[in-house]
Amino acid sequence: MSDLRIDISRFRAAVERVSASAFRVRRGLLRTAAAVAESQTRRRISERKASPDGERWAPWTARTAERRRGTQSLLQYRGHLHDSIVSESSISSARVGSALVYARAHQEGRPEINLPARPYLGIGSRDAREIDAEIERFMARAFA
Image (cartoon, rainbow, N blue to C red; front, side):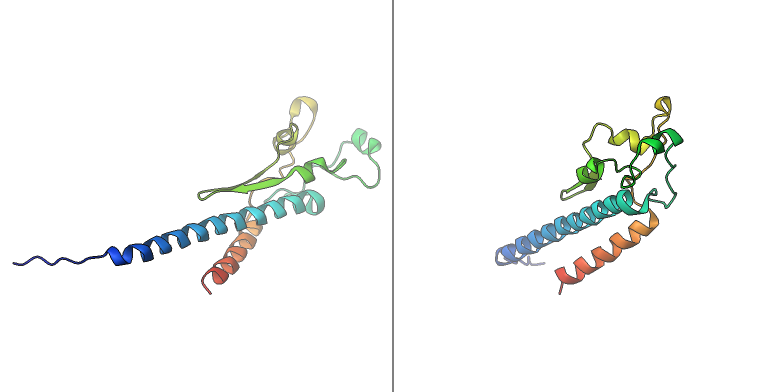
């Protein structure tokens, strides 16, 4: 039997270009998902007033309602939480959150101070469909 030798060095550059392209697509895909999730989270706070799964948040207590002005609403006293929502992405993940010290208390609740959970972070089925649609659009543009 004889040996067959194939020189693939001329294909190395093409393989590296494909690998770099795949890296850019993956990074862009996760950046797109993060941006959509950030926008969904902001809308949840400013408009929907419901958890990612669509469950309406608990209303203010009567005492809290008395202290609020007409333009204020749940999780929007001055808009700091809404404005603090940020997204970040890497080659392997996408995240959305807030660095405010009280953000977790609103997300999870604090029974000891009579603060009910009002989950604003997360991905519900409606959110997942919107993210999937945006990713499909991204992929269509990436491979057009």
